[in-house]
Length: 260
Ligand code: OAD
Image 1 (cartoon, rainbow, N blue to C red):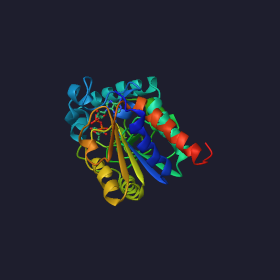
Image 2 (tube, helix red, strand yellow; image 1 turned 60 degrees about the vertical axis):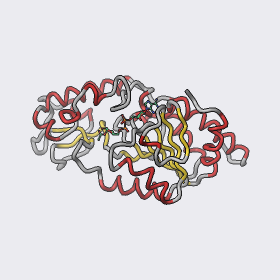
Image 3 (cartoon, helix red, strand yellow; image 1 turned 180 degrees about the vertical axis):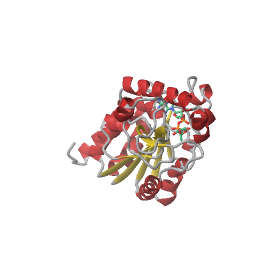
Image 4 (tube, rainbow, N blue to C red; image 1 turned 135 degrees about the vertical axis):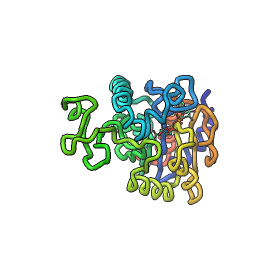
């Protein structure tokens, strides 16, 4: 199911008139690249794996090899996949809007690979690594793959090394979170794409945007929690809806005499 042109028109008009846009994304935006979401689908990760084992400090310390093997599997998936039309459309939208920031809960790096230039990663990145207590950070996969010993250990302190992602029970990076809320409170439009809207504090961003003054548009195949703060719900897969929304916004920008 995809929205009709008369539904996309009003959303495109908001975007074409906006000076500041935040695109807030979740796992659904990467679904059409072949990366499973955490919830709400037949191959959902948290239905197959226990998040308390795979995504907590306690689970990691209990069985680091098991958690690492899960990440190895996910690295393989990410290496083999490509940004999909939704990532590309979001990157292209940058050319039409004076200030556009992607705020993502995803750790896959696909927005950057799709061409987006400003991406705030609320839940960290699977492409960076740090030692257990975060004293030594910024290791790359190339580095850790060269180290002997599995699971890898920090060459500086000998602690276990882990992906620099936010696990359950952990704080989000404070500077990134603050910047995300600052941008949410000053944007004209927030485009919410492919998130269930149930994981805090990220899930509060659309409401924060709406309460200030933004027009909030939610894109998702299912109307769920994330649509609560939205003024407009565009039902459909991100890879189908966003390229059409981009095209409609481009046409309006061209009519307004904007170079495209
Ligand atoms: P979820 O897995 O909770 O939700 C995915 C959303 O994507 C659902 O609302 C789906 O309906 C929607 N969806 C599925 N296919 C889609 C498509 N083709 N286009 C658009 N939307 C689609 O993912 P998140 O909301 O990102 O946290 O989950 C938030 C956090 O929960 C994650 O960052 C992760 C997880 O536990 C941590 O690991 C800390």
